[in-house]
Length: 209
Image (cartoon, rainbow, N blue to C red; front, side, top):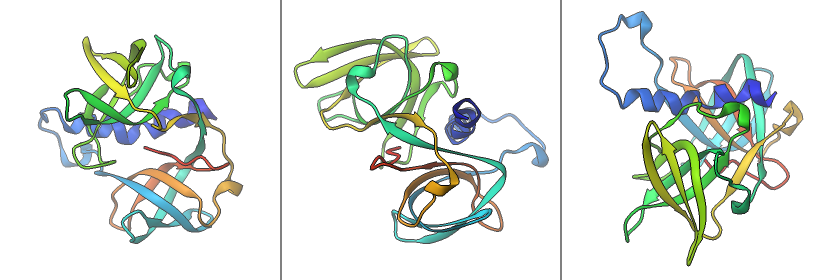
C-alpha cells in the first residue's frame, strides 16, 4: 500500500515543481489541474466524500476520486535520518542564514528520487519544500544540520529540536473519524477539491506537512 500511495502523495509536490519551470505552449486539454493543499480536521466521512474544517476555519467538501489512496504518518527521530535516505523537508529561511526545517518526512527506499527538487511550499509564508537525498547528517551545537543533494545541487538545512520527523504508515477507512487531522493534496475542480490521496493522523501523530 505504501508503494502505491507515495507517488500519489507526491502529485502535489511535483505539480508545484513543474509550475516553477518555464511553460512550453500546450493545448488546453494537456494542462494539468491546479493543485490545492487542504490541511484540517475531518468533520464527516461518507463513501466518496470528506468534509473537512481547514486550519483557516473554512469547511470544505472534498470529493474522493476513483481509486483514491489512504495512508497515515508515524513518528520517527532525527537520528533515523541516515546518509543516502530520501527525505522531504519543509523549511524557512533562518535569520542567521541558511534554512531551518519545519518538518521532515523520511520516504521509504522505494521512493528515492520521486518529486526531487526544491520549490515553494505553503505550510507557512515563504516556506519551501525540498525533496532530496541526504548527503550527510552531522550533529551541531544547536541541533542537527543535514546536507541534502538534488539535481547536482546541495543545500544545508538545520533541524531544530522539536521539529516533527515522520515517515509513512498504513491506514484504513476506519481512521477517517471526526476530529482526525488530514493533509490532502487535491486538484481544483468546478465542483470543489478532488483528491486522489489522503494522509490522516492517527495514534496521536498528525501529518506535519
